[in-house]
Every structure is written in structure tokens, then in C-alpha cells.
Image 1 (tube, protein in one colour):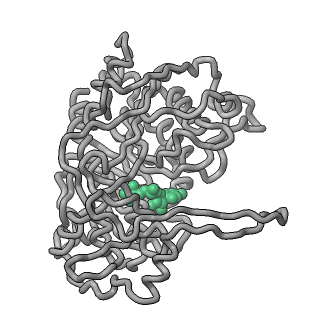
Image 2 (cartoon, helix red, strand yellow):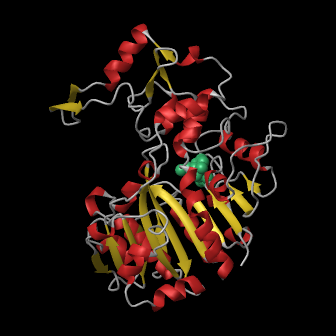
Image 3 (cartoon, helix red, strand yellow):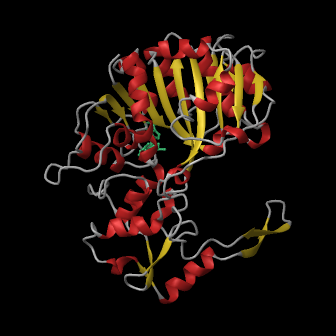
Length: 422
Ligand SMILES: C[S@@+](CC[C@H](N)C(=O)[O-])C[C@H]1O[C@@H](n2cnc3c(N)ncnc32)[C@H](O)[C@@H]1O
């Protein structure tokens, strides 16, 4: 099999940066310097909330117009997507409940605008042998009123499409990467692949998952500390049945799903390398910063405002029924601890916001916001990756939306070997 990829919800290209081990781009053309081992045959990115498309513009600047599509994925005829061996994408955590269609008793209908169903339609039409997806960690336990239902619907749907599934919640900061960011990664393979057949034949999936599992081999765990849980979803007829009746609770942080059977456990990371720190990111960024840091410095009244936002507070509020309650929140680290990987970066990073990072910069003896380049380095993108004509606010937003690309580049070799062996 060839290394042909389709990137859905491509944003500014985090999966591609990771798979093609991109470290920089050509200063004159703006084009990424790629290993080109993985051929990206089709990439889709469309931002529904704005007319401007800065993420897509950035993608095109770095990778060119060929095969880059800026159309709502919902409007794409999935048959028109080229054949590929690997489908990748970071999709949002939405409501994955499904109902039967009124017109057709056998048809199923997810909520409108839920992007998971566009992934499903693509899989149905194109049957890529392998899939690698990313989502927020709460996917394993949402929604609050029916814990685990959404992920159970995803698993059951993939099962019906003929895939076996492995998943893992990975905190990049626990594996020598610069950001404490927990995300769930899902790797699925068609049952007809050699790779899946080998797993299907095994007698002991628990042993496989712990030692040779797709994720756990690359991101090692403390084997002696796993308490394995097994469950079966074989009794559920289809995704609608799962959506309506699933009641087994949340999924644990790593697991596999094969023919309706679940093996899963909570991982304890085991990493022997050095921790990457925010201080190190600031040092690396310094050599790239052309603008002076004046624009980022926080002093005087502004510093007081930040202190208030970051501090513990109890604020009286009124419920819709008129009764009073207290909204309370605790202290945030202020300024940030520079000897740790950063906290998770959100899309609001470029705004005055409790979750934005404020660092004490010893080179100027001042508190300041992190720079756009530091934000890029925290996600392991090349410096100035998003410096493609978008506003500063948008650059932070793109990084809040993206992923720690080092996770994908760490998995790349294993993924390549699996596909080339087919
Ligand atoms: C979580 S982000 C993924 C970011 C990406 N992994 C990266 O490295 O930048 C999801 C992306 O899906 C895009 N998106 C949202 N709705 C979409 C739609 N209907 N069709 C295509 N893309 C969409 C968003 O604009 C956003 O860039």
C-alpha cells in the first residue's frame, strides 16, 4: 500500500506537519520543507463561522492549492474524495446521539452539523484501510447525562464499517513535549488488513494492548499499574440502540474495541527522557523574534486586571429561576511556572483571559503575554508557521485549535511500517 493521506478538518495542517516531519518552510516561497514520504492527496478545511478563511489560506501558503479544498465538508460528495490509505483529522466533540430516520426504519440519523457523520460518510464511500483521529479527552465520558455514550456510538459505528479500534488519551507534556495537553487519539484499521487480522487472531488482547498496542508501544506506560476492565457491547443491535440504551459509563484512557468487545484501562505514563519546559520554549523563541517584546509586556493597571482574572473569586449570580448562587473559581498559576511544560493552550490565548499564559521574562524583568511564535512552538509547529497574513489574534486561535504535532511525528514510523507491510 502507498502512503496516501486525506486530511479532514485540516486547520493549519498539524497532522501533515507531524507526518512529514516538517521543521521549517522556504522563506521566499513560504512552502513547507516536507519529507514528502506521505502524499496528501486531498485536504479539506472550511471555517463555518467567518467569511474570511485564514486557516485555509495558511494551509495553501504552506502546501499549495493543489488538492486543498475550502468547502464545507457537509456539502462534499464523499465519492469525489480520492482513494487513500490513511484518513486523518481532528474533529470537534459534539453530540453524537443518533435516531432512526422517520422515512426509513433502517436508516440512522445523527444530529445536523455534527462532523463525525461526515467522517462516517467518507469511510463508507472510500473505505480507507487506516484512520487516525484526534479529539478532546472528555470525548471518553460525554455526555454528562449518559456517560460514555458518545464514544460508544463512535465505536459501534466504526465496528459496523468493518474497523477494529484502538484509542489512547495522551498528555503531550508527560512525554517530553512542551505542553500539558490531553487529547484522545483513535487509530482504526479495517478488519481485512494484515495488521488487523494479526490482532483478531490473538488470544490475549489485554497483553497486546499493554505492550504492542499501537499507542502504548510508542508512549510507554507503567504496566504493573493497569487495572484492566472488559465489557461487551455485542448485545447492542446498532448505533441507534447504543445511543438510546448505552449505560456502562465512561471509557478508560486506553483501550481497544474488536467485534463488540472492549478491553480498556487507565494509563500511568512511564517516561524516562527530559521534560520540555516553558522556559526552554522562551529561549528557543528568542532567536526568532524580530518584533521587540514591548507589545507583549503587562504592567500597571493591566497587570492588576490580569491578577484579578487569575485569582480565586466568589461571585454572586442569579439563576434563571431568580435564586441566588455563588460562582467560584480557584487560583491559576500567575505568572506561569517556567520549569514545567505549559498549560493547555486554548483558542482564546490571544485575548485577556484567565486561561491565557502570562510569563515572567527574566531577560527584561517584566511580565508579558506569550508571543505568537511561542504559541506555535508549544504546539511543535515551525516558528512563524501562521505568519501568513492573518491577525495576531487569529494566529493564537489557530494554535489553540491545532494539536501537538510531536505526537503525530512520534507515531509516524510505526504507522509507515504498518501501511508498507500491507
Ligand atoms: C480542531 S480543528 C483541527 C485543527 C487541525 N488539526 C490543525 O492542526 O490545525 C477543527 C477544524 O475543522 C474546521 N471545520 C469546522 N467545521 C467544518 C466544516 N463544516 N467543514 C470543514 N471544516 C470544518 C475548523 O475550521 C477547524 O479548523
